[in-house]
Structure formats: structure tokens, C-alpha cells
Length: 114
Length: 116
Image (cartoon, rainbow over all chains, first blue to last red; front, side, top):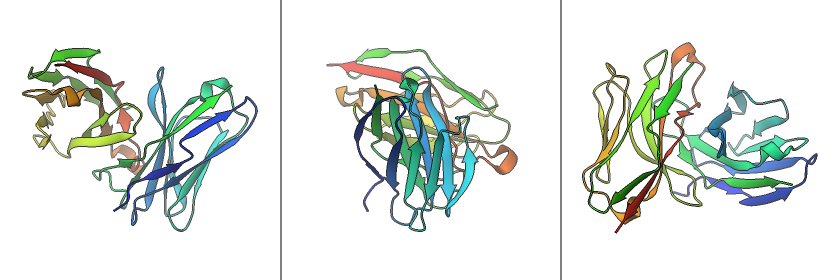
């Protein structure tokens, strides 16, 4: 079974631009979560989608948004990029969203904001 | 709120040494606990997990026991290899409030370097 895939793997943007990242979960998985990883803040939860609905959201500004499609693929969007948005963005999927289920992570998208 | 605290790193060991990485947590409910590993340039891989008190998770020679009385989930391995060099993250998933479904709370990560 194919793992979680994320595209693109690397991105360079300038301040003020917007960016869209894509995540394809493991086949059959309906829950997709997004995390931001930075050296200073570590791994922080952005949001989670389940059956096209945002079910949980972390403490990030409204510039960070996401959505999920009927095939469970998910996108996250960051508008008006700031230098501090430079990070590794990780997507994770799990089967049905139960707490004890394992989340499987993709390789991440590394975003550099100049 | 929920939190996870890992021992300060980095940790440097010689091959075949014993490894312990401490992890303690604060949670309002009865969390599930996880250890993830991240190799350079890659995403996170699940190493092991435990979903209730006294459960022991194990994989690839690594073990961790869910200790509710000490709110701990320490990672151990009896004999490390150079290939174990990576960053290790302790994490929890907390059911409190019924709204945490997909949210993992992570520790800050511990860098492990194993020398031949």
C-alpha cells in the first residue's frame, strides 16, 4: 500500500505570496492532519480534517487554512507569507480518526520564505 | 493543557550501549502514547505505541511502558546501532473534551547519535 504523499517536496516563496500544499493520504484513510515543524517551536498541530470537515484546529492565525476533498486528499493554504512561516509542513493520515489509531506521516514539504 | 516533556539532548552513545530517553506527560484524560522517529530529510515514522496504562509498546528492539502513576513513557533499547541515529519524538493523543481526534502533542525531540 502506498504511503502518504506530499507535493511539492520543496518550495521557495517570497514574503506576501501565498502557497498551497497538497497531501494524498493512504488509501482508505479518511482523517488527515497537518503539522508545522520548525527548529524553534518543534512540531505543532495545525488542523485535522475528517470526511471533508475540519474537526480540530490548532493555534495558528487565519492565514493558515485547509480543506479536504471527497477522495480524502487534502490541501493547506498559507496566505500573505511571512518569514516565520519557513518550516517543514507534515501531513499525516489515519483510518477513521479514533484517538488510539496510528497517524502515518508523509515526507513533508519544506517551505522557505525569503 | 496537554504537554510532553522529553529529556534534554542531544544524546551521544557508542554502538551497543544502552539507551534511555525520558518522556513525561501532562494530560487531562487518558491519552494514548507514541514514540516517533525522524531520520534526516524524512517525515516521522511510528516506532511504538501504548494505548492504556501498563501497556508496553515494542518494536525493533525499542520498548516503552505506559506508566500512569508517574505519567511517563520512557524509551529504552538494550543495544543501539549506528543506524539508530535519528531524532526521537514522544507524543500523546488525548481524548479530553472529545475534540482532539487527530491532534498529537509532541515533545521537543531528542537527537540521538550513535558512534561505531
